[in-house]
Length: 99
Image (cartoon, rainbow, N blue to C red):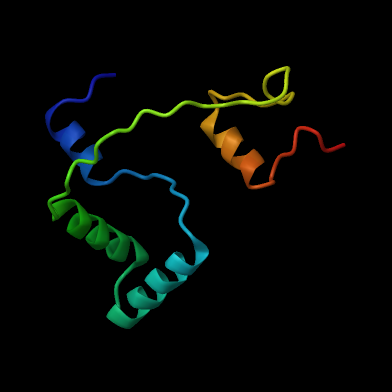
């Protein structure tokens, strides 16, 4: 399936996505939505539009060296190419060593 013209334009206007935000930030955004009689989606979309409209200075990249200690690589069940699983492990939701 190839999207062109109106189909692509329509998809780009409304895209469902999942993001992780701090609980306190979401609570503030929900409160602002209630006080403004609007939706959480509109609050987030407006804040994102406002942030993207500001000119940003490009940060210079600094080289860094990763220093590892120990032997044997990563823990069993850890896949460095699976970002979602890594976040779960770091959040304590999935512990490969838990029995």
